[in-house]
Length: 629
Image 1 (spheres, rainbow, N blue to C red):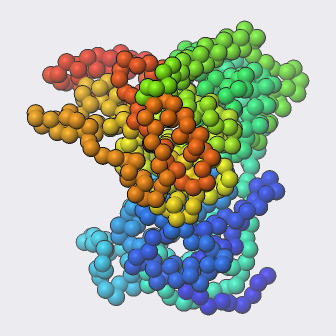
Image 2 (image 1 turned 30 degrees about the vertical axis):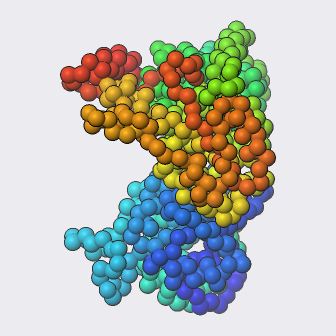
Image 3 (image 1 turned 180 degrees about the vertical axis):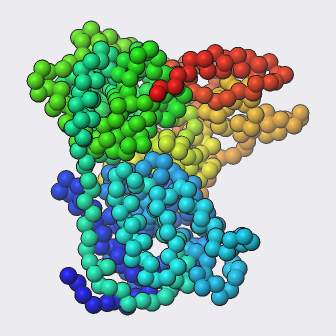
């Protein structure tokens, strides 16, 4: 055992501690926190900032331009690293800290680890208030960092140096727990960061956190096996937990052995590649006709690592079989019990392996050949619809959004990684994209956060050097958060940015029209004489903006231009943007429409015909909602 003490500031001790934390799963060991993102101001410049200067050799520093974007980059890195490695993010007090909230919520919703180290006001209160301090008259111990409590899996405020020891251990325990992980916050008062303390040297010893793979309970496994054997039309719904567990091969083995079709959520898409016979595509509101038809007639839905969001369940209208039952394989009991399911609480890979073994150890269980033929034919029919949506018969025409996706689909290999998060692209990608490798499809849809794509691409590129990384963004999400282009340029990261200019919020514009809001505020246009925003498109040049931030920019005006620009970007060794204005005319063929409903309540009373008609349609769908108990 290491004995004695080491005198350091609280900030220096925290950095030294983090530099010696490791994870290990399946015999593979790696650094838990290999780098720290930071923007400095009062509250962290003299504490964490000074500690990072002293510890540069063992804890690299990553410079960001926006606090929220730094969290997004850290989340992209963690997802690409299989949640076994994560980044820390340090900020000043005040706005620097509150800018973390959106990124923290995204990380926690998606069960992805990130360590947040916001500066805080003085613990000793020698001057009160300090610059950027919010005062709460009824509670002197509240600071803006308390905004991070509801979006963090673990939160602590270090008001004395010695309190760091248990707090740091609890923080790392949470980050490395596959059932709990998400954003972890250690709020650091600026005076405490700079205080010295005699730390036990044992605190700085290398520590390995073994990431567990809990096995299923024998009784739960037995009930699961009996449920599968009794089902005639089972369907697997694979979520992000399959990827987090590294359970792709185990899922394929179950599908191969049983013939059970596999539909995927946004987080799970790609866990079976598109050419696997049992893979039937995305499920739910943004799903394929094949998967959604199977969901409507399934008598057993086997959820693997999914949270069952409203997009997956079509707001409770998708699983329509009168006797449908659910079997949920999940590492958390909270998710395993959803929809009144039989729970199988375990690591996804361990549970899938156990279930496959139990289904094949005596009488091999397999779905009826007619069922396999049915979904195979449906999948082939859907592939023809995808091919039609991708087709661009006139190479001299302006491309549609689906044709942009098709041009990229024709170019990439399994090495490429595709990143998206918000707008109309997630729907097109979930329905149309043909994933070629388990980690190719990176669509953040747990929080569907505009502005995620560009910083996430940086994090993914740091975790996967040498692989082509694409960030697909519409003009709306680009304008939310383009600042990290500067970071990509500074670090010479060859991320590929595809900007689709469609002059507004295409997704929410379509939804607005459906619910009777008549596309109010969803177009990027000048004011018309009547005061509405229905004039000419705004005279903005996003390509020039990206170029001004240091990116190489390739403009594509036609389908032919687009194909050439994408190929050139893929081979580029520097950050490159492909800018394309998409055709949005309603007369053009586009992707297949939504195959399932999504509940967005419509006004019960209205005078305008569009809202009245929308309410009639809404009431029709609501009548199909079921509560699975």
